[in-house]
Amino acid sequence: MGYRVVVVGATGNVGREMLNILAERQFPVDEIAALASRRSLGTEVTFADKTLKTQDLDTFDFSGWDMALFAVGSDATKIYAPKAAAAGCVVIDNSSLYRYDSEVPLIVPEVNPQAIHGYSKKNIIANPNCSTAQMVVALKPLHDRAKIKRVVVSTYQSVSGAGKDGMDELWDQTKSIYNPTSDVPPKKFTKEIAFNVIPHIDVFMEDGSTKEEWKMVAETKKIIDTSIKVTATCVRVPVFVGHSEAINIETEDFLDEDEARDILRESPGIMVIDKREDGGYVTPKECVGDFATFISRIRQDSTIDNGLNLWCVSDNLRKGAALNAVQIAELLGREVLKKG
Image 1: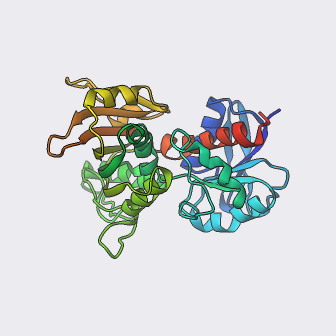
Image 2 (image 1 turned 90 degrees about the horizontal axis):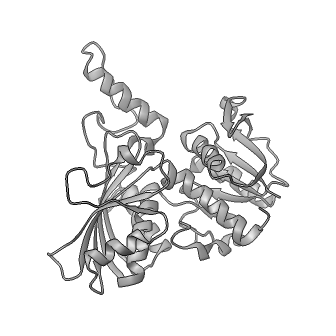
Image 3 (image 1 turned 90 degrees about the vertical axis):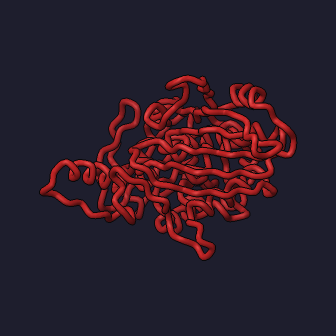
């Protein structure tokens, strides 16, 4: 016996990836519905060997459906997620709308699976920000061993984090550089992204940080431990898919780099590739399409008593969004609904 599953925003990058991953992981689906806005109504999407025509989100009845994976923006989620939840359909939301709501669990299944039981307060579960998701997978096993005090992270985030428009802008600007007759001014990003890096993701806040940087701080505290201090600099780079992070960690107890490497190798969701030789590390291009969070460049930070550095790479459309949502669905089915 399987589940009746809805994918909301099925025509977008993340929605399509959700459908792919549900099929790849053989999630126990009895029936599946693909929903989209009216402008995308009737667009065909694939699920395993099936072709699905998108249905109208505005008129869809969520009654009798077990769970809905939402991959639409906060504005649409604000309207439709409460409707789905009120109809008895558990919402797994990829937007930022509910992440900081104390009555909504924010879950990365490898990190805080026990939080799943808090879903019943609103019938909603939140999926974290893409940059946070991969980082906390790396941090949690080290925190369990040596208690992390402080994290300094610099991110190198791909344009797919800004959606299809971001990917199109990088592609079009890259082509225009080799064609002097064409000019593609920035629209999705604040400056030209082709052959450039932009230290600005989301809006600026009063303290000079950006909303993306604030998200990493707030979400890490909610998912792992409120006592961890986090400071972040988030940068958009001209990479289509795959987020990278340089992470500096300070722990309360000393943790040797070799032990840290062993701990990470044995931790769920992580693949350690860390050879001190040319090419002995993972780049974002190599992680595309993979489920794992890759860790490389593990080494002691000799400038502080208990410090480590590491390099963390993951497919942001997968672990940073669609995969994590499907893993939450699997956890919900296994621990709560227990039908599949």
